[in-house]
Image 1 (cartoon, rainbow, N blue to C red):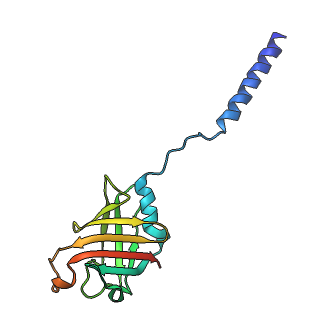
Image 2 (image 1 turned 90 degrees about the vertical axis):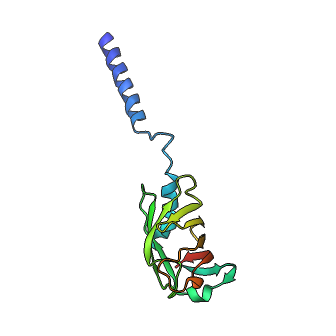
Image 3 (image 1 turned 180 degrees about the vertical axis):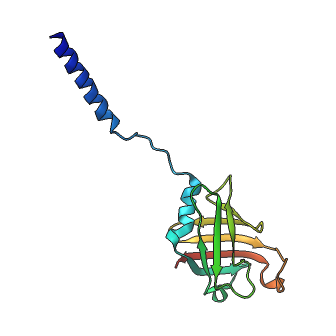
Length: 156
């Protein structure tokens, strides 16, 4: 009798353990903020196109209509490579480079690899970037590129 009771107890205990071992943990780790931002910036692998561009408050959208901006960040990194096509002859963007998400404000600030600080907001339907460009090195028409820029982009 004692052997039967012990055997039933061991079997019941084993069944309870197997039941709980298949359960997922109730609290899973949240995805890092930088990875969330990279997913939004990458836009599912689709480029961003111009909705509106202003420089010093003046609408310059017509000059930027062919501009496509593609981001290709990867999880676990704060550096987000970019490429641009359809840039005007004088542009405040290089054809390619990297954006580095801010360590303190990765949801609103990033720095371009040429040192330009960019304030941004991004959703699945819009990327808005604001920055002041004053780097005149390598630009023959400085007056055409310096100033306060605002790029409002939408999925292509």
